Image (cartoon, rainbow, N blue to C red; front, side, top):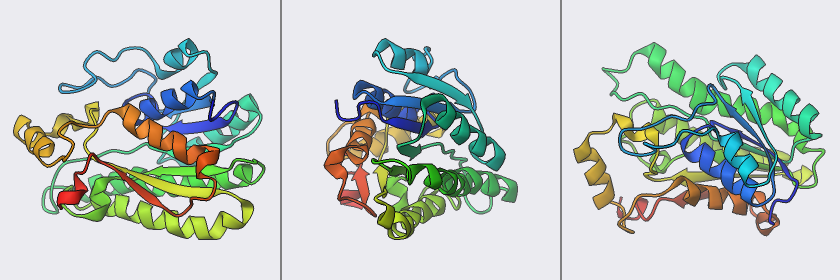
Length: 257
């Protein structure tokens, strides 16, 4: 097992990509704190239509240890509580995965300032807060890892004036944080997913879904497991000399941009 007994936090872990990461971590022997605003997984109209069981239940079926913690990552006090609870319950922290994120459709004239603040508050500020608060505990680990989930949209427009800029900032934050804490043996990397089959895609029209498939070189959409396996790599000893990197896991979507 690549991650045996390593203690991990996965934000946004009840559904979608976060769920996929949490399950792949558990499959590799990790002990996983699943953080989300609700324990019940989201169900989509295109994808994850039959997903009903909580992530922790699936983790336990794999024979691993799981813990659900309720939190809104935009709230600093709640994030601090989650990290403290994880450390107290499992005895430390080895891996932080900042996956929680939202998207609100709309251009600059449609998106309200409050909506912009909400997207950036979760997708960027929340990432910074969790990273900042986790670092003191990761310094105590032999396997300190931070994995930020960005997006293929970090490299171009088209996803709105809040989502794409926030994800681009996360990619740059990865580089900056890697330089800051490399001296402690902690690696910091980003995964940039393309279209993944999750309930978050519900805002798209059927025509937009088909267009995304046509732009994906491998002619299929990604699965949460695809991102989970990339996260396992970054969390494992195989990536102990990889830091400050951003990995596109998009089926070739960005290759044609």
